Image (cartoon, rainbow, N blue to C red; front, side, top):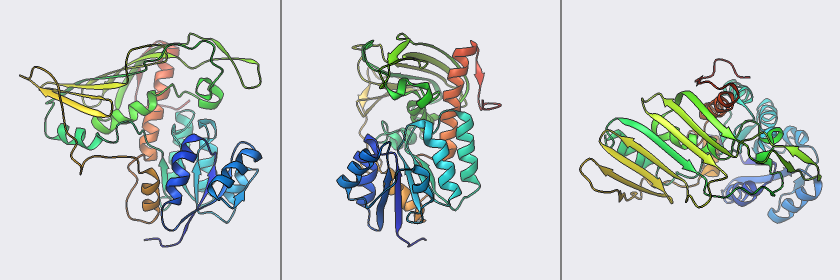
Length: 347
């Protein structure tokens, strides 16, 4: 078990990094956040002042290769995830990378292969957070046969009206986010924890606002859907339907249904509901304290470096699966056909 101090460098200090990762790491004994490199010198210095980080770098590669760190946290947009991860692993440093894993499946494969080549290093993707409280309870109920055979999975996330005048967000920008589409990938990641992965994907999607104004004032084409429907065959025998949308105003909050031969489970508002054949309606299912999960990505990362646990939320292996699903959705929309998984080749 490693006892050396964990010295972390931060590449990309966005909202999740400053609200969760940096304070979470600094709260752990024996962990030091020693350097930061954000998109500009001014923003890097602001973060350094706020969190007492001693060193600011102007170039992310200099930060990664500097001898003052042995772990790197990547909080950039997806377009940087692969290159920073590969550089960090090449420098023999542990990596925690923000979700989504990469721009596409090919990048995710390169990241996974680099991590496999250095199994003594920890490689972690920041997990899908929405269902952490209920995951273990759902897994237990499924194992106990609460649903019988799992037949269908329904995921719906959206609830907002289309905003045609909003400026170009990085999530709209294919050059920054790749094939990642709204919250689709992180919902699929949650579903995988319960029932495993898909084997075939069919999808249709719509982009209603074809151009949006970028930060420099120019219009830029939008290639990422604002409404998407995905139908997939699951390895467990179920059929999955996902509707992820930015146009379903007043539809309510996200929810997931698991339908089985003997029962139904519903997740909504961070609560779990269930019922079985013969019941007249769903009832809330209490989450036992010993099963209730929560956000602990920074703790898991540090414990894995110290040899005290292995990464479960989320491994590079699982990250590749959700990136292959994400790319399969894009391919299906473009080609008008079902795409088998795992992908035969990553484009």
